[in-house]
Image (cartoon, rainbow, N blue to C red; front, side):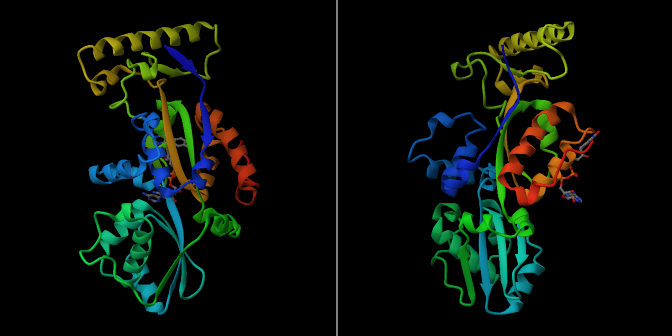
Length: 317
Ligand SMILES: Cc1cc2nc3c(=O)[nH]c(=O)nc-3n(C[C@H](O)[C@H](O)[C@H](O)COP(=O)(O)OP(=O)(O)OC[C@H]3O[C@@H](n4cnc5c(N)ncnc54)[C@H](O)[C@@H]3O)c2cc1C
């Protein structure tokens, strides 16, 4: 049995890579198979997850588009569809800023394949990233859509947007190493995208995991105290039963004896507006103390990265 503290990492380095490598880097957290990443592994990995319906992987990369329409009616028709899971801002009567994930853009096309503006956006994306739309390509390819001009904003341009647009369109991913109780609370934040280490696929008796279960150090009990000793005893017992069950059962069956303190890794991806909401709730004194333990230093990091959005935010007393 291993005991580790909670931690987090803001995944800013993923923002510098391609959308494809980003999807693989995030998707592999579920299987803890990051060691299998090679220069050529991203495309087959992403094709497989798109085919298999492991859809949340396709939520882990967004891009921001500036879409200019010749006719206002195209904007109105698009907005009438009540597009889901996209951040949309009108820059002008004919110009929209649209941020969405691979999944959101795929499903936009699947829901509205005849709408000119949607066809124009999908054509632009599919020509740039054929792998994201390999299964949706029409027989005769993606036809030109006159009157719909689409440009991708480089990240530097998104980062230079005024604070209100920045908060809505800039997304940031954080990897947490935490326990199953905290991760369960984090996933209640519905506008976020999540990928989490799977206790169904990961077998903690394997060498990769050191043949043992890892637990998160509880912040409630001082090391050496009688309460800590009780906690340790419970974890040891849980681990021993889990390893015994694995001798005859699958990980998904054996995990039923694992406790809340079990270590997990989870990637949370959201726009800054949602992160602002999360910090307001999860750094306050009303929040669960282990959640505050990790969210308060994370807020400090976000303030450093995006002072225009988070500068005035303090943990509520
Ligand atoms: C101190 C504290 C105690 C808690 N106690 C409990 C508890 O005892 N039991 C329990 O089950 N949960 C509990 N929760 C979880 C809480 O109820 C929320 O589910 C969680 O904090 C997610 O936050 P949210 O719903 O504000 O926003 P998010 O899910 O982060 O959504 C962000 C915003 O999107 C909008 N939104 C998203 N989905 C909807 C929707 N379906 N309808 C309308 N608006 C929507 C809202 O404007 C919301 O502010 C607790 C949370 C805290 C912070």
